[in-house]
Image (cartoon, rainbow, N blue to C red; front, side, top):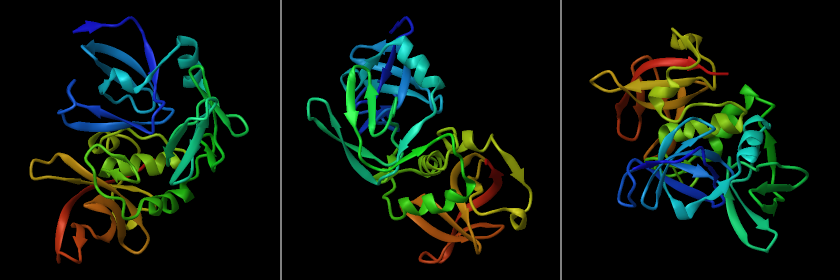
Length: 262
């Protein structure tokens, strides 16, 4: 493998699959959404190992699925306030009349009055937009229900396929907060809530396996409920033991800890 000298890139597609190894047959561990930018760390043939700016997550993407980004643009985007698409799915129009579907929680780089820019390409966006500089914990639960019934997809971050930590990350992003990508990483941030009775709606709840590893997460709802991605984004009961799935009539996840990250 070769190492590159500080190159950068940005997603100009609806979504780019990120894989654990440089191969289309490799496991997908995450996705990069439209407008999200990254640093390219290594190359292997036609593959690029990237580090996403938003959450620091690393993985491999196909070289044909992104646009190169100038250092100046990369540095500006690092400093600028994020503008995020707030529609389940919306079409964005480029200067050459190309239509690109943009999913919920995508970035709109250099956004200004319905227009954004990716590298040297300008786009028109007529959907709803949210500014990242206005975090609002009261929106967490409301935004969580936007993904209700989204199918579970390992590595997914969209309403058309999402995993448990992708779900919590996207909900918090829509609400103006930054979370890491994986559940065990998210569990390292925020304030620990020692008693479930002291938890608030919107708090993150984490669950472990028999080896004590954090393997699942969800968002606390009022009335002893939780919304989480398990098979699909669903609502289940929660108590000090863990998640109780009524349809299966059993506990499916063991409670480990609760964190407040807003």
